[in-house]
Length: 414
Image (cartoon, rainbow, N blue to C red; front, side, top):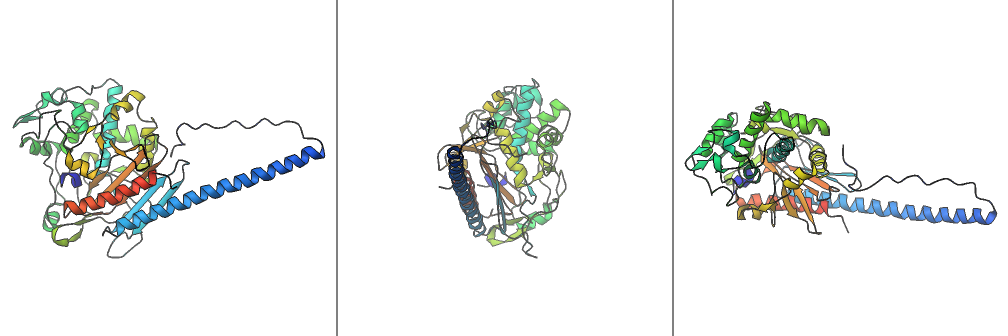
């Protein structure tokens, strides 16, 4: 996720269908009939009040979602699309801004965007499925699974485990190519990198810390996980993600784009703010890690996280492993106050109490935040078509505004 390196909907979990009440014989007598009429009137009034209260909450939640989307737009983000799913399964949608600055066409409420590092939750899920199937152990070393790949300049694959790759505690230094200026973007936006090239860049650096003795976000670590999945299954990582996650969940609008520099329609154009205030349309580009280069929609990402937390993708033991967290670095905690990292999942606190789980993504001009409550009952996704990457302050301001939207969406309006 460059921003960090630079500084079927589910029924509410635990609910059950009520059996229909048993029907008795017809009531006799005027007194009984009158009582029945009175009871019906009371029930009708109570139902009306309940529906009215529910509609009021929906209206409040919808208005708050729109206000939060507008607040993000006010920062200079060109387009914002947000979708929240309530505990009752209702979808609330808000958009703010435009799809592009040239034509000012309206935003599609379910437009495509690049998932970027949100796909790390896909990768972690596949790894844990393989563990459940006995194909690997989280305590396997990288050297066992990828002999001779992690070495040099103090890097030692025999000292790094799969678990450490998943939780960013491997110490592997990140050295992913990035665009430093508009000129850099125009010159290198179609560059294609093989996984081995990107890993080799990281191996030119000494580790950030000994394995297991620190925390640092590492895209290279997840690239190694992609390679491990391919080595074990014989299939590219995107095929395993499609077969194991997208297909079973019916995520028809989550697609692998590989080295294609474009997105399916509809989508909002993507912009990046460079130094000096230059706002550049960066929609056309090839992402570094083509193996997990997916596009998706707010509806699909909501469904994925709700399904994951509901246990539709992992057995309880593997989901428990995924939710065992470690402390993050100070730089990451600035983005995720009081946040902790599990295996491809971020744990964050809610202002109304409790926690939520997420994995945001930022690359290719799109920045996306998401979240699902611990019980899987409420979820939200916001996609922004602008990366304010000219300074850490601007990136953090955007992060805070998007985090507020997710928090408000997951905390019912009072």
